[in-house]
Length: 273
View 1: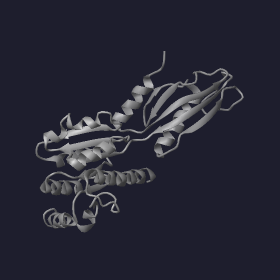
View 2: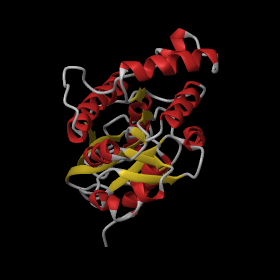
View 3: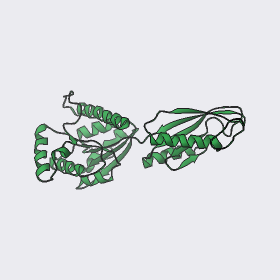
View 4: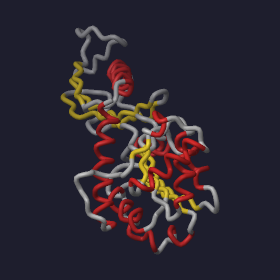
């Protein structure tokens, strides 16, 4: 009967937004504790499943946790000889065979929060939904998050989180995962301003982007300085206009492509850092 515990473990890590490593017995020659294809999942403190115990498993777990501590990391292979002539770190395994183990890092995917799921927000959500990430959609207008309107996201690769808020969408900021990239594009400039103020007061966010013109940002700058007490270096955290500056089209789909491309660069910067 196939060992399916690793599937549940990977899903559990994904839900918790914790990194891990999928460890697979890739090849077996001769006798070994487990057949090729046996899997286990290694987290920062827990493990699920088994690749046979003994030295092979202990060394694989140690190496997996080294990879977790130094993400991003590439998959790698480890070879083990199972005989009594090999000096092992965690005891002798003398089954007589050889085993190759594949370690595949499972990094925590990026997270993006779109405040305002209007024409541009929905187009952007459709693009981002095709990527492995957590996508948070927030809007004070119930119809913007109606199931029928979001049907285009039904086959999403991303995990979609919808937040229906009545009055204060900025309260969602404190509940977002660490490092979430925030995009502010609501239908209401007052709401946008309140979100900018709250984002600057929220620790642990990723990039913060605001849709709009230079004139809009000039008004916001005065308000955030005078009423919010934010200094210029804090205001510099907010990127506006959002997207790639060399793409100047105004159509919602064009803006969405531009913003998504800029986000992909931010994701690469996250993993490189």
